[in-house]
Length: 212
Image (tube, rainbow, N blue to C red; front, side, top):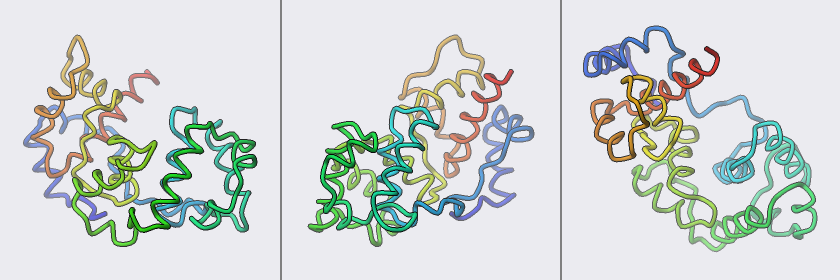
């Protein structure tokens, strides 16, 4: 990720004064992708981990993910050939649901047969990355947007269907109800080309409200 420059952040605050006020007190956008996870060393591993974590609390998902990693040699995520060589039983015993197991199979098959080329995907546009990844079973637009932001470090990502971002904007603007995706997209236009900063701050606003 190209870290936003101070000048770009000041310009963002000028474009959206309400956002600018919370920028002064909330945690700034950290550098992505992170470098502190020894179990995710590849795009493929990141996607496996993302699928494992879908719709689960962090602790439960982390336990399942740890079991998946231990099914193959070394601490990191299985590689595509390793995953394909595993039978269903140990993966199910690790805690993967049938739907997530099917997603794992589809992902690894697409990588192995070349339908999904992860090498060089960082050179693709945001729309192309979303299009490619969304063809995989179990990976929708939201998951692809998280890949853009947290794995590729893209700075202009606004997941309009994310309830946390919607709730953050409700808090930011003092709205009675969460904005709909189209309303969020319209409101978030002023955040470009740093929509990822706005997205991050909306999540942090929700965290602040919960910690209250």
